[in-house]
Length: 239
Length: 325
Image (cartoon, rainbow over all chains, first blue to last red; front, top):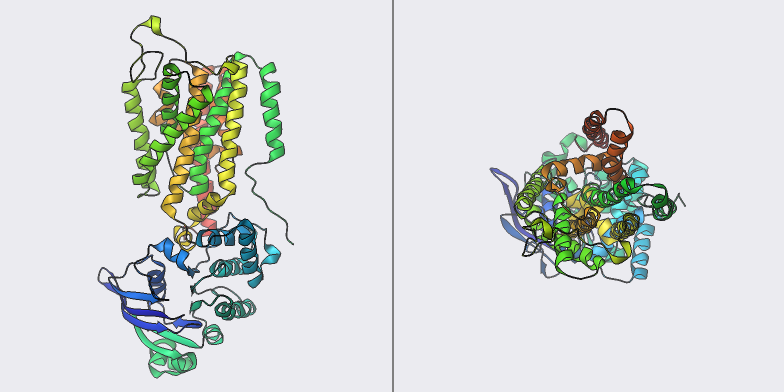
């Protein structure tokens, strides 16, 4: 499912975190990379409705997202995770995922249970299903956020540094999950991360932001070799 | 499989023990003075539970929970004199009127949050104090306000026919309070409770889960106001006449939040503790200890101290979690 972003402009006083971004995410798992302050999180915030752009449109599946109230976008199918994980501490793992499902989909009690358990299984969380999130370590919390993002039928999944703070081994586990999201629910995944290995492992296609503008987009391998990207973002000596 | 952790808000076994004690043991071992005290403890526990629920479960700092309490008290009293409706129906109407007014006021109040919500709701309590100061509580008279003009018309408010005596009314209060606690539990354990937990932790995350935040905050306000409103009606039936507006003043509003925080806002037990602190402990100290008035002041200082300790502790806990970082 394509996500067509057209001329998004965001202004905070004299600062322009996004300055006319036009890009079409082709579907599957897409990377969105760029240095700190490039506008990646602002871009996600525009898509989920926390930030209202002064100009632009985001069309997906024939629907204009930007005119929808924020919580209705979630009901339509926009899901996201946050840089600092936001699993609900006071609820059990099951209830965490159920909360998203019951607000974004309709179904009988049995259907709810089935959908939530499927998402938990997908993220390898069935073993801690009934535990309180407060008692769980960082890895599980990150994976709970993933389960919240994939439960039911998401259309666009925004992952904001989902591997932040995870050791390599767990990041690998996470990348397996991220790669399988599109085939599981036919959703377009947009992955923001500074871990280039993760982006390369998950994304065939990537876009690069710098200073609120689109610097490059295309197959991830090509984008990462692009001289503009090298000089602006990675620095020559890093490769 | 890991250990199963359930909500600790409500342990059925412990509840059963308390209810059995209250219904069958307490009325036969305590005299009229303590029965009245315990009745008011039950009433106040419900008010505390409503305020504690808003703060502890939804994250709304409302200092105005005395307002629906007062509204429920006034409406139930007025209707008790004016109509012959059964008492439980009066309580229900009192609760519903309080909930509707609570929601109407809640709607604009929800545009602000945190400290500002606290201020707006405190002003709400102040406004009610002013209105009640003019209207006064009904005492058997006619007209809208139901205030008598001659002493011969003065009449105590009626109680339910099956609970005329103090011990019987105490039992009735305990049962209604239990039903209100159960009502709160049903909400907390269901879809609203999960939505509230999300909202309390992070509004952006709640939005990302598709939760209509304003709607769920309004549900919380309505439920809390309903509980406090019914409690107000129970209070009216307990005192029966010459209710002073000091029960519903700004000072009472602050006192309420102090004992609620001291009792603890995360479980419904805290509400019971808050009721105990505010209605029973004070009288225990002033009745059985030498130097009554000293203990009165001592208790008030204790509440202040407890409130401070509570805030320091919760700030420390937040720092540990990194919320302030």
